[in-house]
Length: 93
Image (tube, rainbow, N blue to C red; front, side, top):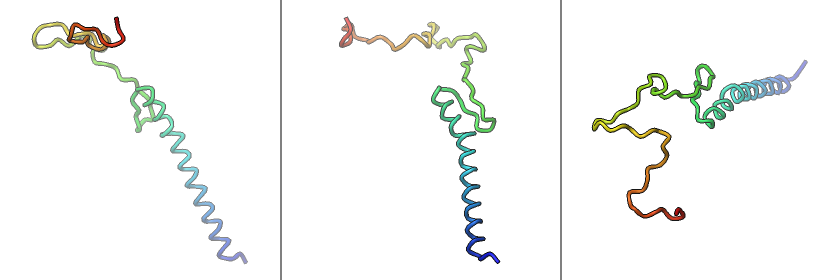
C-alpha cells in the first residue's frame, strides 16, 4: 500500500506543474504581446488580446482645430517651437 508521503508528493508536484503552466500561458498570451504593443506606441486591449493603433480624430473628420482668436493652428508635425530670442541656440549657426 502506498504511503501518505508518496500521495502528498505527487499532489504537490501536480499542483506545482499546474501553476507553472498557468503562469507560462498567461505570460505568452497576455504579458509579452502587451509589452511589444505598448513599446511600439500602440494601445493594448486586454479583453480582446488585440493591439490597436490610435487614430487621431482629425484623420477621420478632416477638420483641423482652429483657436478662438481666428489664427490657423500650427501643424502637429512642425517640431519644436523656435526660440523667442534673436540669438541662435548653442551649437547652431
